[in-house]
Image (cartoon, rainbow, N blue to C red; front, side):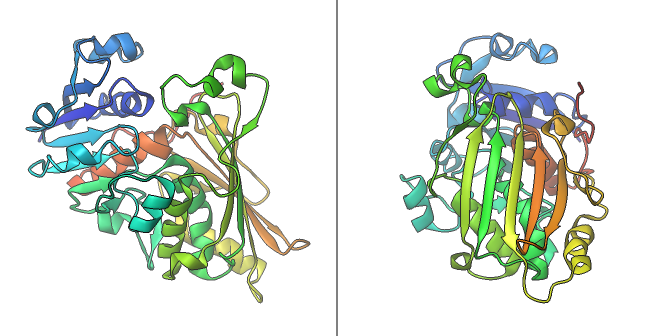
Length: 350
């Protein structure tokens, strides 16, 4: 069966990456691409690397144009998807790459985003531990999927195994992330200009203000089966001069009595057999270069007995495993297709 697909926000980074991956998917036919200010222009003018899609023209983003497809991807700025999802009730499968349907708490949405709150959808991180099972079990047959925030899924995949196994304490998590500016979208912003970010590292959203914090707490609470109030995290992202990538360094206290073998086994047993999340051998740690263009999350684990903390270093490509790859992986599961179809574990080097 071939599925017809529409992608909104197709001129942006996330929309472009969704299209790049879908272009090689044998079960998908990309029929419609939409945008706002760029409507009426050839897609290839804004995504010149997508040569196989040069025949497509960006159309207006309206419910009427998006409807009538088997699958609709929404790659829109946060707070803009809801106005369309409300009008796409008849679409068989809708996948939102924005934040509008990620959070279960209306108060958390009000505190970090504001505006209209929309019902939460099935969360699109298949490997995440949720109440003793993997999230992919909840994705099977799903018709509404919320793709994750790239920083949020990276930290959640880093720490969920230890929290689920009860070997780390989630009340004192510290995460510092080196991130590429493509995660902030394609809109012109002074702080994202090349002249502003080349040769420097710039912290932002410091002091508990980053919008991915409630998403992380929600995901880690699901792993533990506890309330999100029990998840306390100090989260600091830092913009670095690389177009793609996240390198997340997260630490948490070791629970009294947990042995080194029990700690490492928590991550090994959780990700054993996973195609896209790999725990590296002891003493090895990932680089962002190792995941460029791939749908993989590479994890290095260290046990720091002097500080009585576990340190987890995780690398992902924010546009692939962090966003578009997670969306397509979740789509494959929802449709009953091979989970890895059109997704690669191999990065691009050098």
